[in-house]
Length: 297
Ligand code: UTP
Image 1 (cartoon, rainbow, N blue to C red):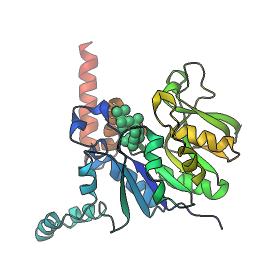
Image 2 (cartoon, helix red, strand yellow; image 1 turned 90 degrees about the vertical axis):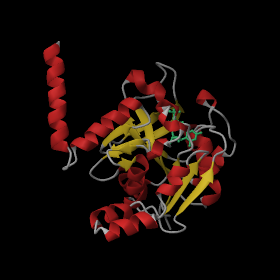
Image 3 (cartoon, protein in one colour; image 1 turned 180 degrees about the horizontal axis):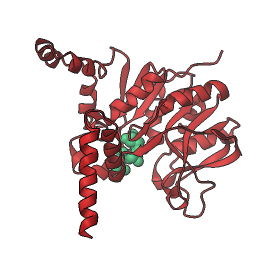
Image 4 (spheres, rainbow, N blue to C red; image 1 turned 30 degrees about the horizontal axis):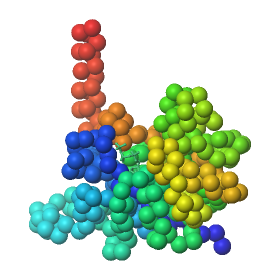
């Protein structure tokens, strides 16, 4: 019988240097888009896709992340006393059942592939998802849910993919396309951070994956790739070379790279504009400052 995807790995052990000095003491994943930490968006997306077990690969200084999923009895009691049921409801969404969330440590930031490998003992012979909370995707149907549906149809490995301009391709893992079937693309593999002009296509991999246990076995070799890091894309390419299918999936939705300052700001504006309680005021403010800026030119 086909196995369902019920486990997700969230690699959050990176140093987050692009957000220093904030990330000196605040984990990047706890930084907020409006009023919700990045990790909350990732958890909600995973839950909606049917994920039951949440595995975080953390590192030193990520204590705030672990606390975030804990019960907060004192806070809840105060809110109950004051009759703030709406806030209690919001808090409920942050709680995880006992045993539903696991934390494993990556002792050195040796790369995304290494972070995923650190969670290997928590994955049996089953497919699993990998979610990078830095990539926030605004979509009617959450991206991982779209991918789980594609997985039910195609099996194999499925990576979320999007078109990027040629001059940006060297910042991503890029798919070597075999057959383009529209939403789904079969591949001959992929190349991590190709040199300028050497990208095999303009279809780049972003932070959502459904992977087979073969990829974990390939990571076992712990070979370093681009940037001297142990790359997840290299292990996926190795699984492809062994005959496993690797599909690119053109998801529906808008992806924000919240690992970069520009992406984080764009996401903040987009999410705030979409909010009923904030959108109107923010829109008027933005129109005002853009108008004044133009008038001053
Ligand atoms: P990034 O490449 O964005 O690195 O990692 P980073 O350390 O988070 O941020 P910068 O570049 O220093 O600003 C992509 C994802 O992979 C995780 C990160 O936590 C992030 O979710 N990661 C990366 C690890 O868990 N371990 C690593 O060794 C590297």
